Each structure stands twice: as C-alpha cells, then as structure tokens.
Amino acid sequence: MNFSDQDILTDLLLDSKMISTGYHHALLEAAGDRSRSLLVQIHNDELNTHRQIFELMSARGFYQVEPARAGIAGTYASTIGMNMMGQQATAPAQQMSPGTVAQSYYHMPAQGMTGMQNINSNPGR
Image 1 (tube, rainbow, N blue to C red):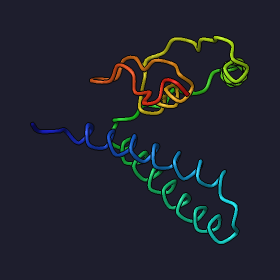
Image 2: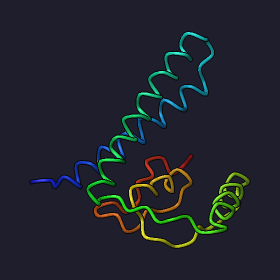
Image 3: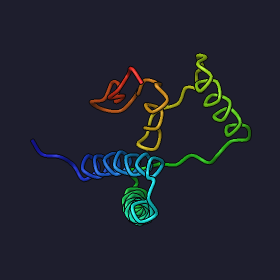
Image 4: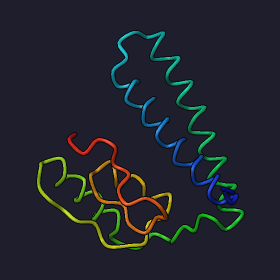
C-alpha cells in the first residue's frame, strides 16, 4: 500500500499531538524540579516539531485553516466548561481537519476523517 505525502504528514501531525499530550500530562504530575525541567524541554521540542509539520502541511495545501469567526471562542469555552461539569454539550458542526482532533479528547466523535470513525482510545475516562 502506498501512502500519499498528505497521509504521511497527517499521521505525523496526529502522532506529534499524542506525544505532546503525554508530555503535558507528565509535566502536570512531575514533582521534582530536575524531572520537570527536562520534561519542559522535551515538550517544547515536540511542540516545535509539531509546528514544523503544520507549516509544511499548510504550505502544501494539506491543512486549510478557516479564519476565526466572532463568538466561536466563547462557544468552545462554554462547551469545554459544560463537559467538565459532566453535562452534555455539542460543538457547532464542521468538517474535521487534523486540527480538530482535540475533539476526541473531549469525547466528541470524529467525523469526516478518512479511515477514522472515533479516535478516542479511552472512552471510559
């Protein structure tokens, strides 16, 4: 099976996000200054890698970013707040791009991504 450049870059971007999330969680749990400092450095390196992948995808037209609309940040914040309080909330329907993978973190089903119906690997969280 041959993968396109877009498939490979999308996979790299998603992997980078998962790795970064892991480092972020480790940072939140780190008790020692030395381990925390090392995790901050590694996490920053991963964030830089993610940015490079994003910029390459954007330059090749693989990652389209829509301009922010007025009020969308407030909708997102209220959705997150409602989810944290255990209430059901739904985000505005939109086509999924690699940048909306965070929806799985908030237990929103992934839609529109080829080959991925629900990327939430831990639904019982």
